[in-house]
Image 1 (cartoon, rainbow, N blue to C red):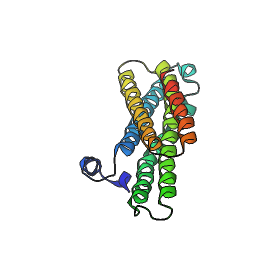
Image 2 (cartoon, rainbow, N blue to C red):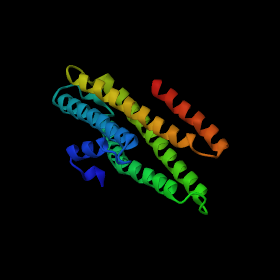
Image 3 (tube, rainbow, N blue to C red):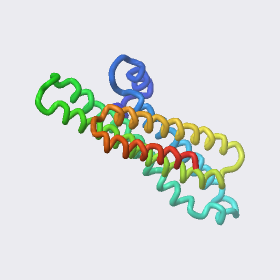
Length: 193
């Protein structure tokens, strides 16, 4: 799918008038890049510290890198996952108005799109926690890549929250909408901590 595209082709598709890829999948890609930069910093720190007598300072780094590697893979898969969930929304809305089950299919597709991006935002919070550890052990010029990673993760998180919120706004289930709006606010607060 889109993750198999060249970077040039993905960007061209994103710039087109096609409904996907769109903001949600772009947010996933930015998140994958943010996690990748954190991984790069962690691996460089690991390499430097193993050569020195500072091994004690990086206790737990292997576990952090393992977690980040899994999060990076999840973020990459999320690019196509977002496209799949949005295709379901487009397909549901393309059903003939007044057709039997259309409203239920739209609601189900919107809920799926919402949950996908909400869960992706939660995944990014895990990456942010791992990044906090790296901030303590990264020194010198490599720390600047960690700052960029931090901004990428924040941008990706905000994109995921916004995409989730849009799906939520169109849903008819007011109880679900109200409850999940609070969930999004809670997630946003966790990012700022």
